[in-house]
Image (cartoon, rainbow, N blue to C red; front, side, top):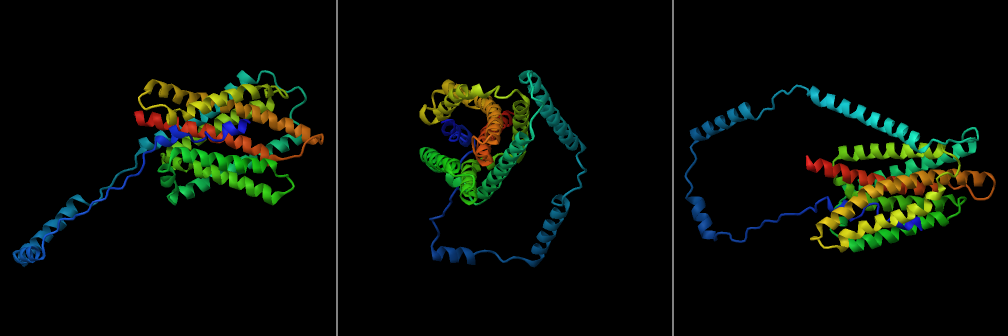
Length: 342
């Protein structure tokens, strides 16, 4: 049930609305002079003197030489220094987040001598599939955006987009879940179709500044990495109780994501509140889902080691992919809003 709420709102209307629709300006000239007036005006033009033509060409060439040649610009050391400073700031931010999260939420660590080898392998394989899925989404989204898919998607009816994306996402996702792990071809085909579906929905994000996308990706990796570290080193099943509260929270975030499609544009204060719930409440909810999913993956690893369930890292990676997408989209919108205020 939680997947139904988590999937449709990875790229909801507030994110898509911040990118403007391309408009084409068409100009046509319908009032053309008659044939006779055109010939008369053409014949009435004075003859061009060769000497004046040479003078004008010389003047034009001197203008080009004097003003249009690019001048030498030395390397901007200040911009390079700012880039190094930003990279150091990002590294300190990610490292500090990991340490702070570990100190606050992970005061009670595992008492069974650390993570067993089978849990480590199961978690590593899940992370590998998650990274591969995110890579497929990024490459496919870039390809679709280059081919003009983003323009067609943003010009379509928003309710139609929501309905089709719901059907495609839930259909491919549950098809992946229901396929047996031993059926590799069908399993990975449906998983790839799920990733391509997410790419088709997220393609309009390519309108954003590449620097903003890179920063949002760095922040998402830092946030999920720190939370995953806490979940992996905490006591067994310590955070599995969060499933119910997180489901209620994601339902509230989902309702706030539909608000711009239902509320009138005059309800400015209400729309501002719903946008804050969708942005910052969504970050908190999907950060909690990351913690819950990591502990759930380790719980499934122990169950598969005992022969109670089948080992299925593809299904586990889908949950982390959804967490990554929802956190990444919100970071992109937050950074874009801050950039526009400058």
